[in-house]
Length: 247
Ligand SMILES: [Zn+2]
Image (cartoon, rainbow, N blue to C red):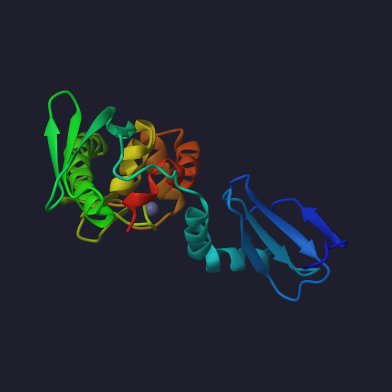
């Protein structure tokens, strides 16, 4: 067990650090080099040796930024919802689905019944099959649900995206390819509508600026002045996602 470090102190955030409050820099007399810790709640701590310059910290952070964000998203615990689920709340599209289980034999299928009821049929004890069938259904649902909003926002912003792709991945909420294909993560379905909308605006803004420059954020802010708070919410968004969806 490591001793509690006596000679450590909390430093104020340097300007170069991301604006999230959960980031902190700690100077440690025992530290030989810069290191980073990502906590389960998503907080990030950069530990630095004495007399480290802010420039050095800022370079370290930008070098490791992607890794940190990845760890951070992993650190956020997803709710342990049962599989097969009893219900699915797709907040982003304002839908609540009640799941009806019909245990049988054979391949697992998902059928939409009337009034937002979802029938799960087949070998429901086979978690991998249930996961696959639900994940396919959710991706289709996300495509149908997000496509009109995406086109509407694109028209407002005066950009012309290519096709919409719905993916299921742990590491990214969305992306925009050089060809203009917009990818959205199926897990956005579980976020608040405002958050999903922000992510679409974000990816569409990349059609103008393929970077995260000041001009890019200005474009985002024109459509969504509250983007900072929504972006922060997205970092914690994995908590709203049932763990079984992710591969
Ligand atoms: Zn981006």
